[in-house]
Length: 260
Length: 304
Image 1: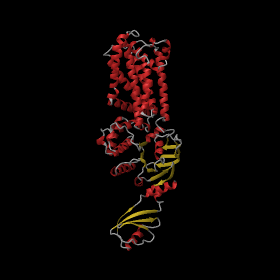
Image 2: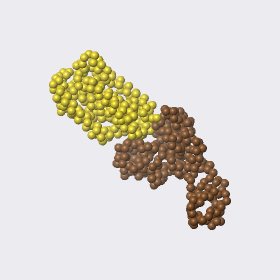
Image 3: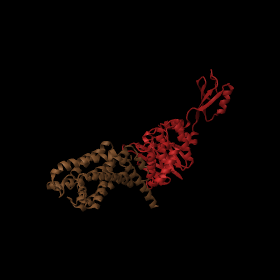
Image 4: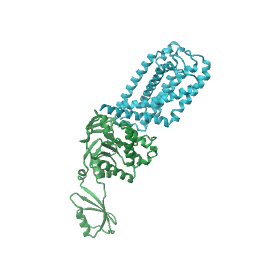
């Protein structure tokens, strides 16, 4: 009986992921093209024009140093944006009710949307990685760390996007967090520089930024250099996943923003 | 077995509005029931609680004996919902909407496709299966929501104002379809503003007003409580002077139309005898007031 129930729930989960993938591919001009254009510009302006005058960072050319950070930035932004826009759209259009009336457990609904966000994040990550190969060589030193960190970071931000969507009441609420919190944290999270360049006090403050750990862990996977210990990065990523998933589940069980 | 058992259901919204004040409803398996009431009576709130779209304040709701507090997933599996407002993704293909809904209920994709074809054909939407849903007409959108609600083959189908805003032809074809699936064993509960719809379709009726059930029972038994009915008679020839028809309250509407009130102690045969005595020939007759509507108005006004 439990196996059958599990299979039914898995089909429900798979259905959400398929629907999300179809949505991402259907509106590819909105989902896949913009990050490709903006990241190409980052590579040309920061990596090529400015980077050529910066010199080495962490023992690598600035372009090599920059590439992992930009890939991770694209993954983070897109996994977050996918879930927040899709789930809020479902709330706004009321088709979230299709899921709420179904017997699919709330945990699977969250996992389905998160997996959809991860899929888009990874797709965009692959596109940006291909673009980066036009500008630099990527030598992946630790493939397992690279892959696991990028997936786990996408999970963290997909969960963040889900919570944002649960609380959002209007379209403005969907853009506030990415604009005022996510983008500054990403820019200050070691995408463009090593925190060793900062005064000591700012190095300590930067360590409160979770994105710093994800960017550095990913850079460690590709280049083998990092400003932080890789074990600490994994611990923080897992703590965020557990914490954000628990909050998401609590919100959905209570019906916050969904049930009156 | 009861398809639905509601006991002492209370819903108080966060702004203090008490939408339901302790209602009790029982619907037997296989029945076709209506939940009637004026706007704001609490019908949609009750349906929202049964289908988990609204959190209840207190009380119990059981669907085929599954308590929504303890066995919510099993209870949900038994229910198909056709909501009042359009609530599918307007940018998705029609067939995808139905197939995905089956997926949310754990139905494998192959079976989901077979059932989608079956229900889209039954509801005359199969030709539109590859269209984007927002291109459908209002009536088609309603039928799509019925197909979506049936794809997991629920034992209880709940329809909230299913025929609101659709033309008469489509409404009648939907009635015929609902009668058919009810005969096949699906228990149906509907809310409607068209009291003719409830009288024609439903064997049981519950009337709700201001958050309370003011009457419920078999439609036939409730209608029997009405003391008078008004008939409109169409005459073959123009009538110059209305003769006295002893015991009957008669109003002449125009030259060839009469309105007659017949109470329970009277009969229509006597009325026709009196008309014949005065050489008045009747070509046709209809019950002027929808009987359920009359009952509804009386009960709701009485509750005010």
